[in-house]
Amino acid sequence: MWRWRVALVCWMGMIFVLSSSQFASQMSYDNTVNWFGMLNYVVRKCAHVAEYAVLAWFWFRSIRAPGERVGRSVVVACGLTLIYAMSDEWHQSFIPERSGAWSDVLLDGVGAVGMGLLLRRSLDWEPSLLKGWLVGAGNSEPPSSPEAMTDR
Image (tube, rainbow, N blue to C red):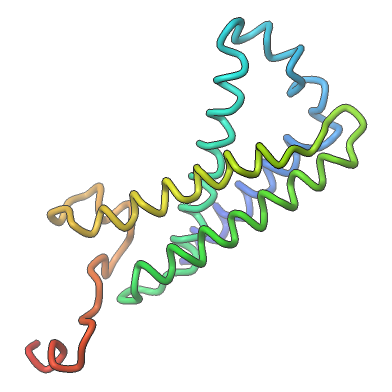
């Protein structure tokens, strides 16, 4: 679990640094249009969705104990991801070359919730390397009733 927490902190640090004044000019709309051309807006917004989907996954893998219910961990991971998204946009509002936008928080939330849905959906998959990689060891839901526990 500690490796996931290290990955989580590194990912959050990367988001923070990319949102800072150090990279403000490189991450501006005017500068990225040179790279992506007409797709600039779409690429930038898809990047929000993707980076926060990964953040939600790192939160999930960092907080979920083996055998713990996936649903609870997904909700907590999505909530923590949204809190970080809001704090990142707030942080950007203090950077002269950047701006904080609630529409970006919404896109970040789409990424987090999308990852949460993928994690929940993966429980229905047959055991596989991908399922184990996504949700980790003990990747099945524990029994929901005491009667089901006695059937073990």
